[in-house]
Image (cartoon, rainbow, N blue to C red):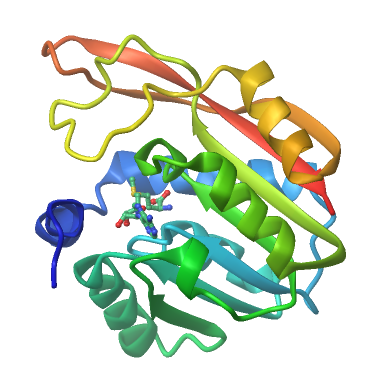
Length: 209
Ligand SMILES: C[S@@+](CC[C@H](N)C(=O)[O-])C[C@H]1O[C@@H](n2cnc3c(N)ncnc32)[C@H](O)[C@@H]1O
Protein backbone atom coordinates (compact mmCIF):
# COMPACT_ATOMS: atom_id res chain seq x y z
CA UNK A 1 0.00 0.00 0.00
CA UNK A 2 1.33 3.47 -0.88
CA UNK A 3 2.30 5.46 2.21
CA UNK A 4 2.09 9.26 2.32
CA UNK A 5 5.82 9.61 1.58
CA UNK A 6 5.69 7.16 -1.33
CA UNK A 7 2.80 9.14 -2.76
CA UNK A 8 4.77 12.36 -2.42
CA UNK A 9 7.53 11.04 -4.68
CA UNK A 10 5.08 9.11 -6.88
CA UNK A 11 3.38 12.45 -7.58
CA UNK A 12 6.70 14.25 -8.17
CA UNK A 13 8.23 11.54 -10.33
CA UNK A 14 7.26 12.62 -13.85
CA UNK A 15 8.38 16.19 -13.10
CA UNK A 16 11.53 15.40 -11.10
CA UNK A 17 14.13 15.61 -13.88
CA UNK A 18 14.54 19.36 -14.30
CA UNK A 19 17.68 21.03 -15.67
CA UNK A 20 18.71 22.00 -12.12
CA UNK A 21 18.23 18.49 -10.65
CA UNK A 22 20.10 16.94 -13.60
CA UNK A 23 22.96 19.43 -13.17
CA UNK A 24 23.06 18.75 -9.42
CA UNK A 25 23.18 15.00 -9.95
CA UNK A 26 25.96 15.24 -12.49
CA UNK A 27 28.03 17.44 -10.18
CA UNK A 28 27.49 15.16 -7.17
CA UNK A 29 28.30 12.05 -9.20
CA UNK A 30 31.53 13.72 -10.28
CA UNK A 31 32.33 14.64 -6.68
CA UNK A 32 31.81 10.99 -5.65
CA UNK A 33 34.17 9.87 -8.42
CA UNK A 34 36.74 12.45 -7.31
CA UNK A 35 36.64 11.30 -3.68
CA UNK A 36 36.51 7.52 -4.17
CA UNK A 37 38.54 5.10 -6.19
CA UNK A 38 35.66 3.49 -8.08
CA UNK A 39 36.32 0.84 -10.70
CA UNK A 40 34.36 -0.90 -13.51
CA UNK A 41 34.24 -4.20 -11.60
CA UNK A 42 32.33 -2.79 -8.65
CA UNK A 43 28.86 -4.01 -7.66
CA UNK A 44 27.09 -0.95 -6.26
CA UNK A 45 23.83 0.03 -4.56
CA UNK A 46 22.12 3.42 -4.88
CA UNK A 47 19.92 4.03 -1.82
CA UNK A 48 17.05 6.37 -2.72
CA UNK A 49 17.86 6.17 -6.42
CA UNK A 50 14.80 8.12 -7.50
CA UNK A 51 14.65 8.55 -11.26
CA UNK A 52 18.24 7.28 -11.45
CA UNK A 53 20.05 10.55 -12.17
CA UNK A 54 23.05 9.64 -10.01
CA UNK A 55 23.22 6.02 -11.12
CA UNK A 56 22.94 6.91 -14.80
CA UNK A 57 25.88 9.31 -14.36
CA UNK A 58 27.96 6.67 -12.52
CA UNK A 59 26.97 3.67 -14.67
CA UNK A 60 29.92 3.99 -17.13
CA UNK A 61 32.38 3.70 -14.22
CA UNK A 62 30.83 0.72 -12.39
CA UNK A 63 30.13 -2.96 -13.08
CA UNK A 64 26.52 -3.10 -11.94
CA UNK A 65 24.08 -1.09 -9.85
CA UNK A 66 21.06 -2.00 -7.71
CA UNK A 67 18.85 1.11 -7.67
CA UNK A 68 16.73 0.94 -4.50
CA UNK A 69 13.82 3.23 -3.81
CA UNK A 70 10.52 3.13 -1.93
CA UNK A 71 8.61 5.06 -4.63
CA UNK A 72 7.29 2.98 -7.50
CA UNK A 73 6.65 6.17 -9.48
CA UNK A 74 10.31 7.26 -9.29
CA UNK A 75 11.48 3.76 -10.22
CA UNK A 76 9.06 3.65 -13.17
CA UNK A 77 10.79 6.78 -14.54
CA UNK A 78 14.16 5.06 -14.18
CA UNK A 79 12.84 1.85 -15.78
CA UNK A 80 11.55 3.86 -18.75
CA UNK A 81 15.02 5.38 -19.27
CA UNK A 82 16.69 1.99 -18.99
CA UNK A 83 14.36 0.53 -21.61
CA UNK A 84 14.26 3.47 -24.04
CA UNK A 85 18.04 4.03 -23.91
CA UNK A 86 18.97 0.32 -23.85
CA UNK A 87 21.00 0.69 -20.64
CA UNK A 88 22.21 -2.51 -19.01
CA UNK A 89 23.56 -3.12 -15.51
CA UNK A 90 21.10 -1.00 -13.53
CA UNK A 91 18.40 -2.99 -11.72
CA UNK A 92 15.59 -0.98 -10.10
CA UNK A 93 14.42 -2.51 -6.81
CA UNK A 94 11.37 -1.29 -4.93
CA UNK A 95 11.96 -1.52 -1.17
CA UNK A 96 9.70 0.02 1.45
CA UNK A 97 11.74 -0.92 4.48
CA UNK A 98 15.40 -1.12 3.45
CA UNK A 99 16.85 -1.81 6.90
CA UNK A 100 14.63 -4.80 7.57
CA UNK A 101 13.88 -6.07 4.08
CA UNK A 102 16.95 -5.64 1.90
CA UNK A 103 19.25 -8.66 1.97
CA UNK A 104 21.26 -8.45 -1.29
CA UNK A 105 25.01 -8.08 -1.29
CA UNK A 106 27.85 -8.21 -0.57
CA UNK A 107 28.53 -4.86 -2.21
CA UNK A 108 31.66 -2.94 -3.20
CA UNK A 109 30.04 0.49 -3.04
CA UNK A 110 26.91 2.12 -1.62
CA UNK A 111 25.97 5.70 -2.42
CA UNK A 112 22.99 7.80 -1.45
CA UNK A 113 22.19 11.32 -2.58
CA UNK A 114 19.52 13.69 -1.16
CA UNK A 115 17.74 10.80 0.55
CA UNK A 116 19.03 10.79 4.15
CA UNK A 117 17.00 13.87 5.15
CA UNK A 118 13.91 11.74 4.44
CA UNK A 119 15.11 9.01 6.81
CA UNK A 120 14.04 9.01 10.47
CA UNK A 121 16.64 6.55 11.75
CA UNK A 122 19.83 7.43 9.83
CA UNK A 123 21.86 5.36 12.31
CA UNK A 124 20.00 2.18 11.33
CA UNK A 125 20.48 2.84 7.62
CA UNK A 126 24.24 3.41 8.05
CA UNK A 127 24.46 0.18 10.03
CA UNK A 128 22.63 -1.62 7.20
CA UNK A 129 25.11 -0.11 4.70
CA UNK A 130 27.98 -1.44 6.81
CA UNK A 131 26.41 -4.90 7.00
CA UNK A 132 25.83 -5.09 3.23
CA UNK A 133 29.34 -3.97 2.20
CA UNK A 134 32.32 -6.25 1.65
CA UNK A 135 35.32 -5.63 3.89
CA UNK A 136 37.08 -2.69 2.24
CA UNK A 137 33.82 -1.61 0.57
CA UNK A 138 33.14 2.09 0.06
CA UNK A 139 30.27 4.38 0.99
CA UNK A 140 29.34 7.89 -0.14
CA UNK A 141 26.47 9.96 1.27
CA UNK A 142 25.61 13.38 -0.06
CA UNK A 143 22.85 15.52 1.38
CA UNK A 144 22.11 19.03 2.52
CA UNK A 145 24.34 20.69 5.05
CA UNK A 146 22.33 21.91 8.04
CA UNK A 147 19.79 24.44 6.75
CA UNK A 148 17.12 26.67 8.31
CA UNK A 149 14.16 24.54 7.20
CA UNK A 150 13.45 26.64 4.13
CA UNK A 151 14.63 24.05 1.60
CA UNK A 152 11.31 22.18 1.43
CA UNK A 153 7.95 23.80 0.91
CA UNK A 154 6.33 20.37 1.39
CA UNK A 155 7.77 18.92 4.59
CA UNK A 156 6.05 15.54 4.32
CA UNK A 157 8.56 12.94 5.51
CA UNK A 158 11.33 15.51 5.92
CA UNK A 159 13.05 14.26 9.07
CA UNK A 160 16.15 16.50 9.02
CA UNK A 161 16.82 20.06 7.94
CA UNK A 162 20.13 18.93 6.51
CA UNK A 163 22.97 17.60 8.63
CA UNK A 164 25.73 18.94 10.80
CA UNK A 165 28.94 17.41 9.38
CA UNK A 166 30.49 16.53 12.75
CA UNK A 167 27.33 14.75 13.87
CA UNK A 168 27.21 12.84 10.58
CA UNK A 169 30.86 11.78 11.06
CA UNK A 170 29.92 10.46 14.53
CA UNK A 171 27.12 8.39 13.00
CA UNK A 172 29.55 6.90 10.46
CA UNK A 173 32.02 6.11 13.25
CA UNK A 174 29.28 4.49 15.35
CA UNK A 175 28.34 2.30 12.39
CA UNK A 176 31.95 1.07 12.23
CA UNK A 177 33.27 2.96 9.20
CA UNK A 178 36.89 4.06 8.82
CA UNK A 179 38.73 6.60 6.69
CA UNK A 180 35.81 9.02 7.02
CA UNK A 181 36.22 12.21 4.98
CA UNK A 182 33.92 15.17 4.45
CA UNK A 183 33.83 17.65 1.61
CA UNK A 184 31.40 19.92 -0.21
CA UNK A 185 29.75 18.14 -3.11
CA UNK A 186 27.83 21.02 -4.65
CA UNK A 187 25.98 24.25 -3.98
CA UNK A 188 22.40 23.92 -5.12
CA UNK A 189 20.55 27.11 -5.98
CA UNK A 190 16.78 26.98 -5.79
CA UNK A 191 13.71 28.85 -4.71
CA UNK A 192 13.21 28.32 -0.99
CA UNK A 193 9.88 27.84 0.79
CA UNK A 194 9.55 31.62 1.24
CA UNK A 195 9.87 32.22 -2.51
CA UNK A 196 13.40 33.64 -2.30
CA UNK A 197 16.17 32.05 -4.35
CA UNK A 198 18.91 30.67 -2.05
CA UNK A 199 22.10 28.65 -2.18
CA UNK A 200 22.01 25.34 -0.31
CA UNK A 201 25.36 23.70 0.38
CA UNK A 202 25.53 19.91 0.00
CA UNK A 203 27.96 17.79 1.99
CA UNK A 204 29.65 14.62 0.84
CA UNK A 205 30.79 12.02 3.34
CA UNK A 206 32.88 9.10 2.15
CA UNK A 207 34.17 6.18 4.18
CA UNK A 208 35.34 2.58 4.05
CA UNK A 209 34.36 -0.63 5.82
C1 LIG B 1 15.13 13.84 -3.35
S1 LIG B 1 14.99 12.25 -4.08
C2 LIG B 1 16.70 11.94 -4.58
C3 LIG B 1 16.78 11.02 -5.78
C4 LIG B 1 18.20 10.82 -6.33
N1 LIG B 1 19.08 10.22 -5.36
C5 LIG B 1 18.78 12.13 -6.80
O1 LIG B 1 19.73 12.62 -6.18
O2 LIG B 1 18.28 12.66 -7.81
C6 LIG B 1 14.86 11.20 -2.64
C7 LIG B 1 14.49 9.76 -2.99
O3 LIG B 1 14.61 8.96 -1.81
C8 LIG B 1 13.56 8.02 -1.80
N2 LIG B 1 13.37 7.56 -0.42
C9 LIG B 1 12.94 8.28 0.64
N3 LIG B 1 12.91 7.50 1.73
C10 LIG B 1 13.32 6.27 1.33
C11 LIG B 1 13.48 5.02 2.02
N4 LIG B 1 13.23 4.89 3.31
N5 LIG B 1 13.90 3.94 1.31
C12 LIG B 1 14.17 4.06 -0.02
N6 LIG B 1 14.03 5.22 -0.71
C13 LIG B 1 13.61 6.30 -0.03
C14 LIG B 1 12.38 8.79 -2.37
O4 LIG B 1 11.35 7.93 -2.83
C15 LIG B 1 13.05 9.57 -3.49
O5 LIG B 1 13.05 8.88 -4.70
